[in-house]
Structures are given as C-alpha cells and as structure tokens.
Length: 257
Image 1 (spheres, rainbow, N blue to C red):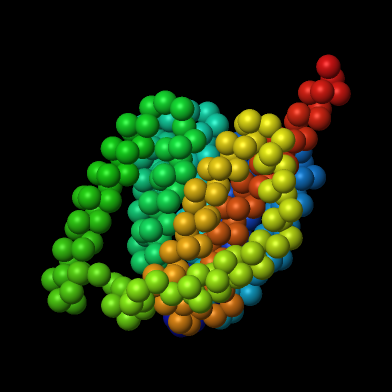
Image 2 (cartoon, rainbow, N blue to C red):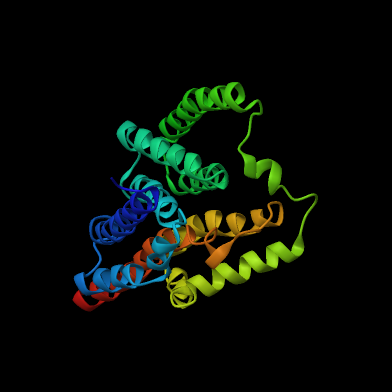
C-alpha cells in the first residue's frame, strides 16, 4: 500500500520529468532550436531547483508543468496562428494551472494577456475558450466550494491576503525571481536584436513582471525555497531559449546570404 508521501513524490517526479520533455519539445518544434542548444536548456532545467522540491512535497513542479503547457500552447498560437484546438487547449491548461494554486488563476490571466498581445489575428477563439471554460468549470468549482466549505474562495485568499500594498514583499519577490533566473537573465539582451525578438521579449515581460508584482498584495508566508516564484522558471527558459534561437537563425541567414 502506497502512502501519501510516496504518491506525492511520484507525482512531482513525473511532473518534473514532463516539464523537461515539454521544454525540449518546445525549443525544437516551436523555435526550431539547434539540438545542442535545446539539450543545454533542458539539462539546466532538469538539474535545477525544481528537482529539490520533489522530496519536500511542495507542488511547485506540478504547478510549473501546467503553467509551461499553457505557455507552450500560447507560444504556438503566437508563432503559428490561433486555431480552435489550440485555443481550447490553452484554456484547459490555464484552468488546471488555476486549480493547482490560487495564484494560478492570476497567472493564467497574465498568460492570456501575453498571448493576446502576441497573436496578430483570430483572438476571438482564445477569448471565447478561456471565458467559457473558466465560467462553466470555474463556476461549478466555486459553487461546490461554497456548498462544501461555506465560503467561496480557497483558504489562502483569506489567510494570506495582504492588507494594502506591501513593498517589502514586492522587493523580495523581485529578488527571488532574479536569483532563480540569474543564469539565463543575460539572455534577455538577445531580445533587442530584431523586431521579432523584441515581440517575443515583450510577450514574456507581460507575464513575468506583473506576476512578480502581484506578491505585494499576497503574503509570502511559507514561501520555502522560493516555491511560489519557481513557476516562472520553466516558461522563462522556453522564451529565452527561443530568443537565443532567433539570434542564431539570423546569423545563419546572414552567413548564407
């Protein structure tokens, strides 16, 4: 008979491995990244901080996986166009992200804004799918919660809600995200090399900057090992790895010309 701890470790281990696979697949299929570049990024994710959350039982790898899946589909919409299939997948993954952690709903909203900025046309399927799934499935969930617990929102909303803006939490959140992304932050410079790269950089910033700032309204209590901020790592690696790929592709085209 398996205990809860073993099940938790198993689920988190699978989530971490799946995130590594999704990152590799995204770099290779979405950006057409060179093999060695894709391997370098995926190895960095595999041996990075996410691995250390597994034995502690924190949900960060599971949360990060579904945020990365949402980001992957959103990036596909930006690079290759919006279809109803992609729009529905985006909404489903975003909804699951919101179910895993309460702040996941906020993150899902930011990722929707990023994707809507990035796509050039056919925004309606994204908006309609997102709105329908969050309204119908989210409405059912909230109705069940209200009936079962007697109050509408998850416990952290009541326990961790900050009274007013907390600038110390903002500074801490910014510092933690910078520290977690420190090895790849210099790659942001590749986002200024071309109009296409700048667009990709802005799409990323529309999510990462407000998600960093939102913690000045939510308490960072029990933020062990910066687990609340880890969700930014996998999706940031996909985008910044893509920026390096865009730069590499420009060099290759110029060399051939």
